[in-house]
Length: 397
Image 1 (cartoon, one colour):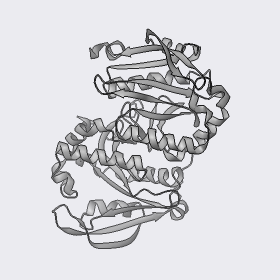
Image 2: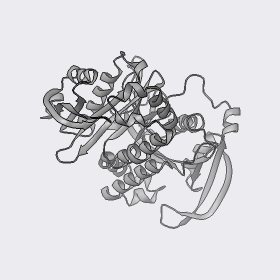
Image 3: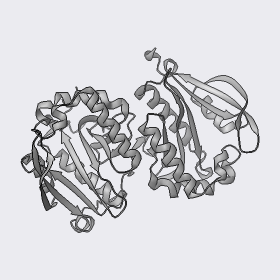
Image 4: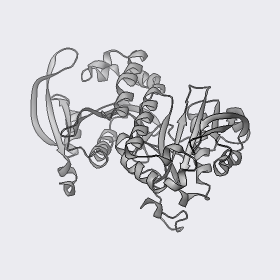
């Protein structure tokens, strides 16, 4: 059970990643992370809510009446928020274990505001973990997203929840009378607390040291993270494609159009719907804090569950093992986290670098699909490599 993790491990304990394995996570500090809810997390999330039902029912009507179907619907609505860019829901994780949840409502563009919601398992109350998590989230909101205000709305009758914004130094802003449905199903008041960016900065909120990557990202190692693409990444991604256009165009026909608008459309029409619809994912490759390329899983089929790997890397970042490390992490994720049965990698027969990646990872060479791919000038043959889950994880067979 995840609740068995001690709050204070022995001083000699080895460092533990704050996020669970294979997670698209926002790391808040060395112990705490937020794992974005994906569709396949719904069943486990219901199990945690069921275990905490008596604890949560006093604050949340949805928890009192939760069913597997209602929690799945809640996860799907949250993913739709992420697709629209106006919020998200995530597991609150402590040293790799989910112990609660944090979400953003009404997330606005830079200069605007957002509203934070949260819950934590009873066994973890009283250790300041929610306060720590929200302090880390403030930095993400103010420095990472450029917001101007963060707010928390609580039922004034819920003393435990109301104590959190006060501990954080938030200002009491307003009490909206009979503004929401309380846990008992009756109309109840809603008290708003908020902090402005300038007040947060004046109070020393900006931490010393580099800001953790302000994206939900799969951490490969200390140098490399694979972050879900969002609208705000479009300018940097378009500039990187433009700088590598001549290098990419022989293999990637889309590289001929490097206009920022084309990149934004790719994010809006492919990357964000993909994660919302469990149709693979599109990720930026961040190496040593710099965006150096993109990768992902596409052409997903449900029966049997399978898909294809894709990637590109800026010329200046070649030779550092980035693609091999990234592809290994993606293969781990699709087999261990998503239970894919097969993943393949296809490359122009003349693209020696891409074919070498598949061979280094132990992919099985299946053959050549003739005249399979239009590269922008001609149809070319594609070499096909594959891995089955039982080959990557023999115990899965």
